[in-house]
Amino acid sequence: MLSHNKSDLESLDITDRCCTGTTGCEWDGTLRNVVTEPIFVQKVYDATLVNLQALSTLNNVRFTPNLPVGSRVVAIRAIRCRKFFNPANIKDPRNLSVEPDTILSGGEFVKNEKCEFVEVVGPDGLYTEKLIYADTSECDTIERGTPVFGTQRVLITGNVIIEIDLVIRDNRDRRVNVTISANVPVAPPKAPILLTNFFELCIPSVQGSAFFPRFAEFCNVLCETRLGTNSIPRDIEVCPETGEVRIDLIIALCITCEKKIIVPVQLCVLSTGFPELSPVISPICTTFPTLFPRQIDENSDDDDGCRRTLEE
Image (tube, rainbow, N blue to C red; front, top):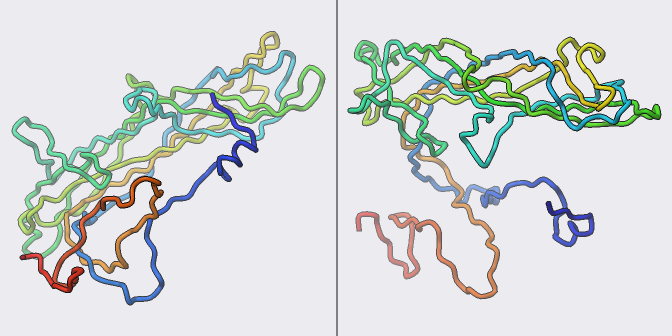
């Protein structure tokens, strides 16, 4: 593993371990350069938000590293919990994941000739939206949306990483701060945590648009943990011969799920122009290609003063 001291970091022009983003968007604060631009986007027609929670009790969880032989725990400064994720394998069964599974009533998900759900690309760039079909004729006559009802099962599997900041007294009776950690399985793939909830959503007419409404759902999970009985003598066991640490814990999984009805729309928006990033200049090349086409229509002039329309 590479390491750098403070002087090395200064020579590399690294001033902070964290960073901020650069959007390339600038505005002078006036309305002179504001123009209208059409964009083709996804509009949220209806949405609902659900908060769920689950508890997992774990006993004799092994933490590392071992404490110095002869030491004892006198206080806990902090307990932290975070999701485990292996960036080298997105299918790693240890990755903490939330998988929603939804059944509709009053409507149905559109399927193809192989009886597979038709999924379309969502704003995340993945196939995460399903097409919905329902008989909307009754509500269409009064220009209202049609309700559909859903039963959702949420399956939670994977591991969490727990870090505990301890204050110990070593064999010389000195107070020492120590951090221990553990990669803890809270729900194996063969025995997931199952949560159920119900919801209602409103969909627009399936006849009044070129597109079927789409159903999108996504969830996120956080974890919180504490000692099983909030007692150091009862919940923390330190082997006096080896310094091995085993702890009883209660882990709370806090889940947020959002479900949306999506419809494609075209909008006219006010724009101050297109982003322009400042490139890293190469000492060899004098010109570089553009990444996006220039808009040419009746409202723009080219360099020789000729006005052109999109139809030309």
